Image (tube, rainbow, N blue to C red; front, side, top):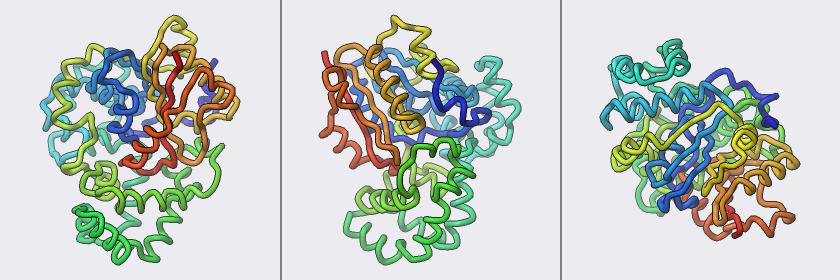
Length: 366
């Protein structure tokens, strides 16, 4: 059984050159510090590596898009070959004039498929591999063409300084939340523009309500309720690099832990459905499911959820995000899967990847 979205979306290029989901709340939700085997959506690889570094005994990363797996493969090679500061340069978290040379050091460690992909995309290397995706290009257009029409660099820098909540709220209301900001934001983050420039239009098939209004409200949460100074996702969107705010997998404290455990991660160009059919005896303790349920019908969501629970050990946890498509455990699975609503609500309140309307954590009953 293949994935529903595989017949409708384009998987010929890197869509996400970074994971735009907060690994801090993901790892806490899944309790990977206690070990166990984790099944993870690969995406660009950051969160699969974060799970590995946070204590998962084994991580199986899956993606239907071979280009996404090339991102993960190059990250694994970079953790093996480079030092921490060099990794940040290659990703694009820090400025660099030597990314081509850093890639050449990693290149011999790549399998032929990943090597061929990156050899054919030198511009992606030169810009930083974290900028090489369609979604990152979408943010670059916003940063370079839209944002300057509203806020200059000094105001952006002032926003990213953060500070106490009262200061953040005062700054947002008096200097940031202008009519021009709201107007251009609603236009640029509309379903139409995001589908043309950012996400695949097929990903919006089951979306309900206004995407732009939802993201605008969540952006206020990120700028006021959370501290922008600590938010790597916001830093990248507004400046094109992470600055001192790094995602979990890229922090210095995570670097050696990930590097010494790289033999515990594997990746496959398969959908979850295909993998579970191929490995029917495999059992997992944790599932990082990204936001994949947004891209399928409710019937197919229920079917896949049933298969996942069947591949889970008692006490295993599932974590996934909703943006505008409400997905959570159906009532008919109540005897098999328990929602951890208090935990999920607390974690979602601190979610630095602020686009999502909901974060779901569920536990397989023993």
